[in-house]
Length: 602
Image 1: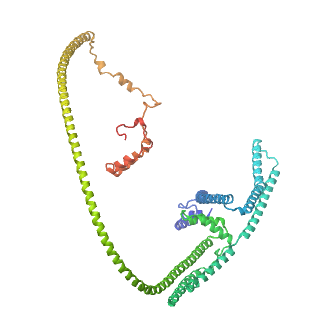
Image 2: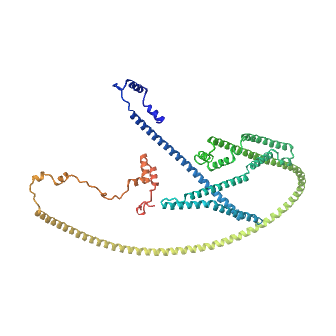
Image 3: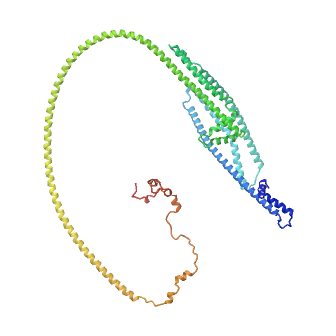
């Protein structure tokens, strides 16, 4: 019995009952108030409670295991989705890189003098393909052959009533193939490590980056040579510009010192070895920030890939890595800002020096131009006096020519007016002749129209007389037909009356006179006796009639019915909004063409 079952069993008894039980044992079984304790019954009850507790624990443990398995499955499914996305991205990148490389090799990537390099690369590619095929034949193909052989043997053994033949040879063959594969994997791992060591240039890259950064900082600290070599006529301006460069350098050196204090004690791997840090960075890069539960997913994957790392170490490394990347990014931003501000200050300084040089040159040129302009003004005054005399003579000649042109223009206008007057007189005569001819044609047309109108009126009068006679004839025919119809109706009524009289006479001849029978009248009827008999069980094998309509499920599946019911429940079924919504809702499938109404067809 477990401790839990014992506690639950003991909790059912209080201290008073224990004392009463002790008193009963002390008094003895002969006392009238003492009862015999049924230990077998208590033991059975205890065993039943223990079994029920175990079953409960098993059910709880089963639920916990199922929940854990479900959680593990969902996490693995999310990891699988991320892996598929990453695999697709890597495949696309690989195909794109291979395509670009082939386009570069077979396209215009090399010139004519580089054909030797191209041929060497193609030969190296062929050697790699041959080595790949050879490696596949020696490592992968034996495994597939062994699998096919084992599958064939299993199938043949199942057909022979599970008769296992030569199991030692098969097991030795499997072990030898497995050992060969392990040797191949170990050799590939060694080659991978050696290649990684050969191609690893992390320290060199860091040294180069640090050296380049130091050179860049030294370059930023120095004042540009353009400030010293520029031609500046004002020495105070040059000293102010140098002071501006020194103040800019001091400001950014202070910022860099603040950023570098954050990076003290941190390296590129943040305290881990290079392999674990690269694995950590690669896993984080696979999980995009837009993914739900991103952090929990990549932490779970890192713990699976690096089981020797605890969760606290992983969280601390994540914080230090974020802090390292933030600090390096901020340092790069400070250097970029320093470079940008230094370039802007240099451009402004050079433009200012150039403006000062140009203004100084302009002032010197202005002094030279003033003296030259005074000499030119004296020469221009003499030329202006001579030009005025020439202008007065030209004005007199121009006035004479203007008078002559005016007289010629007046003569030309007089001749033009005379020709226009003659042309208008001829045009007026032509218009008068046209109006006279048009009036004569109108009179002839009116005369013809009057004659035609008289002829039409005469024909219409004759047609009216003919129509009156036809109407009178039709009216007389209708009266004759009406009289004949009335005569036939009266004759029919007379024949029906005579027929009814003959039938009534026949009914009177064959009528039966019933005699008085009080016993039959007061006795039980045949229908009542039939109802008193026991009813027979009648099983209906099929419906009484065929229903050609919709079921309740088909009616409720229509979205229009559900929307109308929801609107009716909300009290909106008589509003314009409900009419608009119901007019836009379409049925599950379009109606047949023969069921469509032609009245509302669009």
